[in-house]
Image 1 (spheres, rainbow, N blue to C red):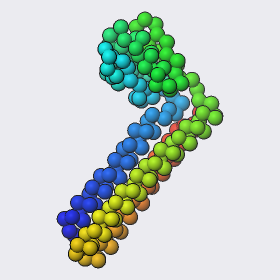
Image 2 (tube, rainbow, N blue to C red):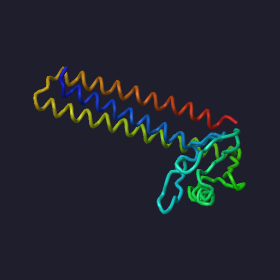
Image 3 (cartoon, rainbow, N blue to C red):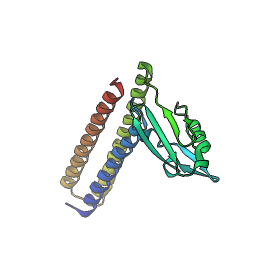
Length: 187
């Protein structure tokens, strides 16, 4: 083809893949019944005056499906970790035994599961919008190249490739949503 067209196709694919990566990250923050260290991924802790991710001030683990424990690297951080978890507003009530911060993950109610599915659908829709915007931007770039002398055939082929890429990424997003929905609704 044409180097500029190849560049547009490559950068569009990269951009669409980053939408999938972002969606995976968002899905990992939506809890699906069993305890997981990823549930605390958004928790920031005040560590000597600066906001620090929880994973950098303690070891987060899940001894069983209903419990998350945080072993602080410094005992003095226990209160700070508890406060950080409360401020993150995740619906958890942390307790400590002097050495560990312990979180009991309550089972999800049917209503809460439905809310989480809505949240997952919203995240996947946002990703689809991102992919469609990438398609629009790429097609605009191709149209500019066409005005600058790119042959009509090359432009049509590029637009076709972009559409195929878009369809493929939208399908992946739908597949990811189906898996996450099943995970959330499984009791």
